[in-house]
Image (cartoon, rainbow, N blue to C red; front, top):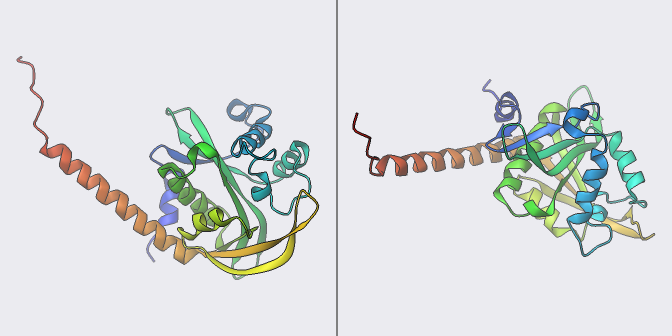
Length: 231
């Protein structure tokens, strides 16, 4: 059996170019400091300055309490992974994070509900696309998943389009499923991403990157050689 493309990402340390996935470990204060979850909470607020709660109503859909204490306490019990863009070999900028919100295990296969957030400075960038690919690969491989499921507020159309490009499909809408921080109820759209469909996406994207590298190399070869100093 041929090796999964996702295992190739794992072998490369979940890094592609300057983009990488780094599991968060609060015990590694040398990397994360002592207040990193609150820092991420602040980034979520900054990502939608027009709202007092930033992107948290979309990210934490179903949460009635979006205070920093409630959200950070919840995240402290989850195995979150940071979406990073390296600015040097040892330094990086956080571009978002992801985690499995609920895992479903069986002897035959595993699946999970998962959550993603990309911070505003990286919206629509090539880095966000690569980090999405790496993050989803990380979730599929680390937790041995056959299927990743998502739930979102039905009005959150952009999140649906973002996941659709990786192969996810919407499977239904459940009315009045999600509580809101304003005390109401909202409809929930459910989506599914099968590992086989996602692997097909990854193969296609890697081929595109390879073709781009070949074309760049051909352009480099066609340039006039620089003059060398006389010895």
